[in-house]
Length: 506
Image (cartoon, rainbow, N blue to C red; front, side, top):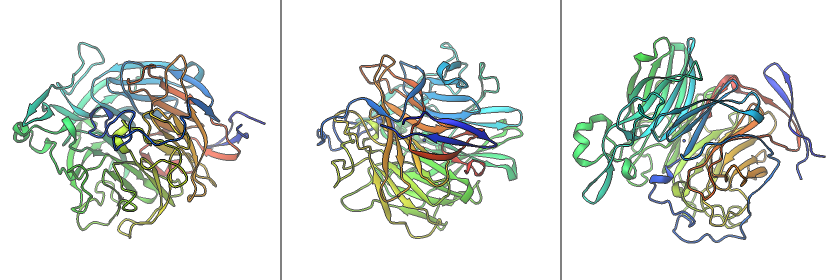
């Protein structure tokens, strides 16, 4: 018998009755290993027959299309979804997912435009990551008031984007129909992704900023001196931290925090792509391209990233299983396990060839699962690897953004796989993660090319479409999930997927 997801509210929790069924990338547009239709070695994928568009246990209940741009990350506040795209952001009311309402579609160029939201007094603030140098720091939501990518210049046979504003943009979105630009916050090498870390003890919000020197995002040699501390040059070897006083967000300041010397070099740099914080245990997972790192954030203003500070490096499992680009991570809500993701090919290659070897043909681009350890302890041993079991042939497919469903007694993860769609993974047996539901849609709206796939308040929200398929983008998809079992899942007042807060624990 198949039953749709049903919710029975009781305080902060809901009971899910689930019937038996029949959760910021290395920019795909600027990644030297993007091969489109080939694997990371530049060869056709060795895979079983292509498993085409279909779904199981993830019925679509709502959609808000967004074409002509690259749709990026998501954040949530109440019944509002904040959906980033390379040309701005949208604010959507999802109170009725079948009739999703676009409250604003704010024009503001600045790839990747990953978003997060947080309350400062009576004001709701939105923060955006800008990782492509812009002609100006501000924008007002109009075409005339928009910024633009700075031009590409050539020096010494290499291409660079001319130096300009990049970092964090801050908006007031208290009135979701009328976002207001507040300020631009320059950070070194821009902001590819960012993570909010609340620190109520001192009345501040810390923003951990991840960035790295890659491709045309580097600073041209002739501009390095003028750029000063904001220059984007190898090895980089740091993160930026923005401190925002919640009583006066305009009084922000920026610091730089060094990474340790033994951070694994990747493509000539030592830098992080993404940071996941798990505040109940005061730990952060730094996804730093060549390795992953576990930091202590007992002092949220000063993560233990540097030499002589307690942290743990997780390096490639073996000579035959080498990390290509560690992209992001998630932590189970009880803090016992974490997973890191290798975005092989930077979101531009075909890595989904069925289950991992030796059971299947996939060789790279996995989620890797580990026991959590204390920062500074020896690195844990690999527990397992996961790849969607549905072979995708020459489709651009690799692991991408995910989160863990807040339930007790079971480990479930929602994850995006670009043109492979979306997957729900059951890793209750951490040694054997298994796909239990999925959606890979092609219909009149467009074709799956999923960037972010997140569980939030009993549905999965997906932002997708990189403006690169014959079919158009899908924009925001909203799914129910049909599984076997009876679970209690926590409802949140808000969610920034890279920030796991104590009040959110089931």
